[in-house]
Every structure is written in C-alpha cells, then in structure tokens.
Length: 70
Image (cartoon, rainbow, N blue to C red; front, side):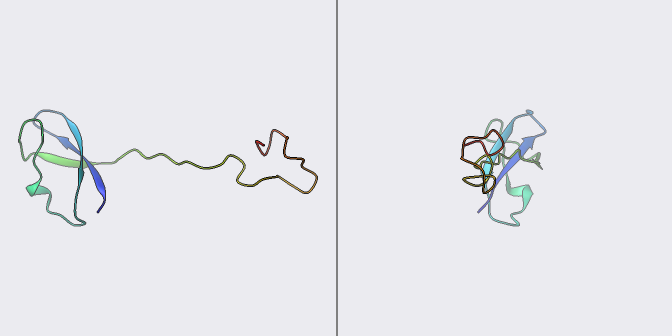
C-alpha cells in the first residue's frame, strides 16, 4: 500500500496516509479537524545512491580521483 500526502482544505494541514490503491478520496478524514475536504498532493521524494556509481571511473583510476568520489 502506498503512502499518500493529503492537504486539508478546511484547516490547511498536510498529512500522510497509508491507503489502498484506488481508495475513494471521499472516505479520507483530516486527523486535525475531522473534515472530509481533503485533496491528494504531489509528494516530495528523495533519491539515495553512491556517488560515482562504481568503484572506479576507468582503468587508470586508483580510486582517489574527484570524479569517482572514492
């Protein structure tokens, strides 16, 4: 089940909710004020990874250059 962010149009609070895919938005209630006037908003996301993506940037790399981050 995905986590969605919702904006309450009554009290202006943004909250997260674990929902079933395709769940009817009219059943969602704001945890702050209890209103049903909520709208799903675009969530922010973060991408995590290793800088450089590999242990070396080429056959001549010793692993200490600035381009591979090692």
